[in-house]
Image 1 (cartoon, one colour):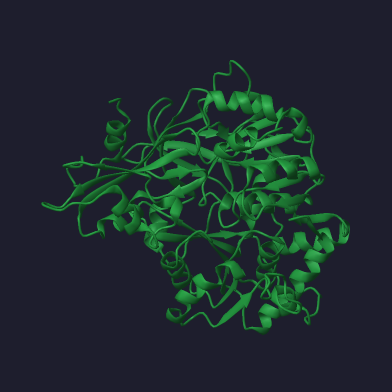
Image 2 (cartoon, one colour):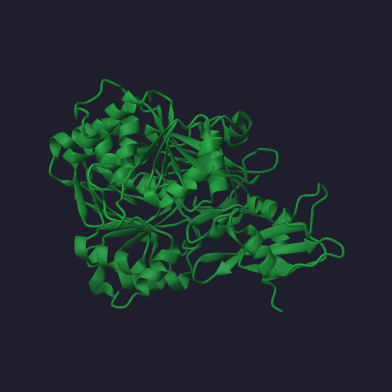
Amino acid sequence: MTTAPKTTAPRTTAPNANWTLTHTSRAHAGSRPDHAAIICEDRVTTYTKLHRDSNRAAHALRAQGVGRGDRVAYLGRESENYYLVILACAKVGAVLVPVNWRLTPYEVDHILRDSGASLVFVDDEFWDTLEKVRPQLPALHTVIRTDGMDSDGEPARGTGLPAWYADRPDTDLAQAAEPDDAVVQIYTSGTTGLPKGAVLAHRSFFTLPAAMREHGVAWIDWLPDDISLISLPGFGIAGIGWFMHTFNAGGTSVVMPQFDPQEAVRLIRTYGVTTTFAAPAMLQAMAAERGAGPEAFTSLRKIAYGAAPMSETLLKRCLETFACEFAQIYASTETGSVAVCLPPEAHHPGSTVLESVGLPCPGNEIKVIGPDGAELPPGAIGQICVRAPSRMLGYWNLPEATGRTLVGEWLYMGDAGYLDEHGYLHLCDRMNDTIIVAGQNIYPAEVEKALAAHPSVADAAVVGLPDQQWGEAVHACVVLRPGARATPRELLLSLRGHLADYKIPGAYHFVETLPRNPTGKILRRAVREELARPL
């Protein structure tokens, strides 16, 4: 079992691990009222405005009957509205359920139904999606449109989110949140392909920075003067987590409603962005932009990357192009924050640990176990387990799934790997076969189930293969029913409307049989190896 070492680094003043988002909102409004909290599409929201408007929204939520433990959904792109709603929910003790705006109505229906959300905020862009599922959701009694538009597509005066809370007081609510109170419920599919709501508490957004300061390390850090680019979607832990860490430190978040490499480069140059978190494919796209040389990124001090492997060639190019510190992270929604980090000092030519994902972050522990649950020695491959104070409270209404993933204080990550003799964690394969395309998780069982619904398909296996642009590409191996015929285009068209576009396989391979183990489970690793074999 490996724990983080202690080293020396300057300390910074920031909230401690016992704070809550409510505490942070009030504290920053008092100490740095005119400091920019959020910049989105060149609109600036100060800490005072964010605090007061989220207070108004909290009073409006309470007037709608929303209280402690109630689920409130948000179907929309990242903006100042999204983060204002999160704070409003925190201030009444409600739990925000962010909905992936890329999902189909069928997928949105499951999340809203499973969470039991009684109120949903929705951007006009996704109004039609909500309308398709709303009649089947009896628990959903209130819908708030965030950005009412007129017939010309311009904001209509007196409509949208600000109009909804405009007449409410901006005073603090008496609601007292605790660090272990639930605050957000993020849906993430497991190996069964069924979306599960991972419930995170306030502490998930405070424990890591506090532990970093306590141990005197700055592998990844958020400073009061930081300007962070939030380029990953806020419906996932990477986007919302990076924002919350910046917010809690008192920094400025430059929020992108949707990632675009050209716009990302412009924002970095315009606002003097100092730090960001991105998937390798996003960094590659930014580095390829015209005029994206070191002079465009002089403000950057640190980039964190993860969610997919980064090749040595791409890392070298990024180090040259962005000319700042790099830190690799390993995490999941269930860990609530970063679990393992490869520090900046490991990112140099000739480093012997670049093939690892790093060391456990301060305050965290890592172990690798065998099939019998016993801890394995260095070099032995097994299941990775993480003990972290930021970990989830559990899966919403799924005690059995929670018990399989959260065993005591340990999270069973579902990934295979080993610890070397120096305590660095090495990933070997994903035990749950998750495919990662440009930082987005895709779960094979979900896609396989959708393929199996086609009348010509007898069996299917879905895997990810390396892709230079996106990290991985989705491939499907399909067994047709006797006498049946189907083309790749027919299968692709059959999936549209049932799966988000990024989940749909781009390549189809017709085979006679699929490899399975004695219990009948598809051996996806064997499928990957066969497809990767040179012709």
